[in-house]
Every structure is written in C-alpha cells, then in structure tokens.
Amino acid sequence: MTEQHEPKHLLRTEADVDTPVEQQREELAETVEALAAKVDVPARVSAAAQDTTAKVQEVAQETTAKVQAVAQDGATKVKQNPQTAGASLAGAVLAVVLVALVRRRRARKAVAQQSVIDILAGR
Image (cartoon, rainbow, N blue to C red; front, side):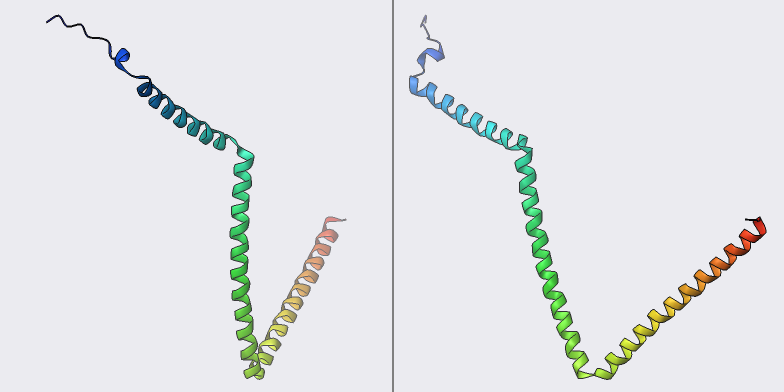
C-alpha cells in the first residue's frame, strides 16, 4: 500500500514536453503577426484606399455605360421624330430667356428700391 508515486512532470517524456511548447510558439507567432497587422495603420489605410478606388472605378464604369445607353436611346428618338426634339429645344431656350428677364427685372427693382432708401436716409 505504500506505493511511491512519481510526480507527473517527471513521467513525461521529452517529446511530450516539446509538442505543447511548439504549439504555443506557433500560436504566439500568429498572435504577434495579427497584432502587428492591426498596428500597421499606414498599410491598413492604403489597403482601404485601394478598395475604395476600385469600387469608385467600378461604379464610374457602370454609370458611363448607363449614360451612353440613355444617350444612344435619346439620339435614336430624336432621329425618329425631329419635330418633337425641335419643340423641346425651343421650350428650353424660352425658359432660359424668361428666367434671365425675370432676374434682370428683379435686380433693377432692387437697385431702384435701394436708391429710394438712400435718398430718404440722406446718403
């Protein structure tokens, strides 16, 4: 009954001890690499900038393709019915002229009102 038991650490072989140590070293190396990547802010910013640039270029290409398709469709419609296009153009020109006239009239009215105020104020 009085068996003498050796402590467990003395019963382990050298191979048993090396395996956990090597595994812990590998895990520690992975952790250090992950932390280094998180700390490397310039690299992260550069990567984010490259991703954003790629996305913007993709959206620009898609938008250009859509605009070209719409322009092609509009050109086809104008060729099919030039009277409608002429009437639309005349309407747009008329709208621009009317806006310019209204602004001019308002500007003159404002100058005239300012002149009256200056006269009354004795300036």
